[in-house]
Image 1 (cartoon, rainbow, N blue to C red):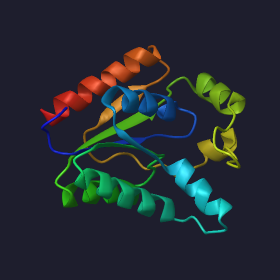
Image 2 (image 1 turned 90 degrees about the horizontal axis):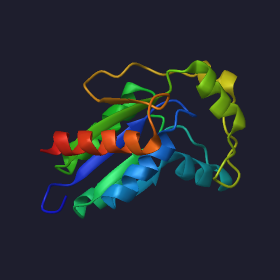
Image 3 (image 1 turned 135 degrees about the vertical axis):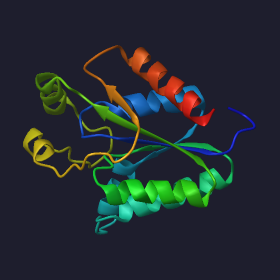
Image 4 (image 1 turned 60 degrees about the horizontal axis):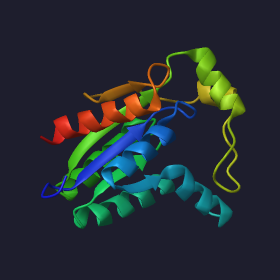
Length: 172
């Protein structure tokens, strides 16, 4: 992907759908810069700071700096509301970057629940949300075209390949 404008790839989806696994795989394939909201927010919590929108604000600032360097940046976040999606869109626009949006779902409710209930945190001190917290969470529908990856169908390699193909098609 050399000699291209910077690219911001934003993953979103409920916790436990597999977005971190897929976004990390794509990060490796593209040798991209990886930003994970969970890591930023947990660092803020550990420092005694309030979270609110601050994790997304910091991540957008880090993305902007890396886009300015011409990097491919992958943001791994729940991205549950239009306001957070608009933040990413503005960051891409202000850095003349191509924006690619990918939503990760798990259409098999039993599988999604099993994943949520059996996973452990890979971030020190981070308490993962419960199934009840996830299903009662505010999550607004997306308002424009994006790739929808369903982790209930296909292997991890296939999902990463789908994401990579979509990115390449979107950036031309």
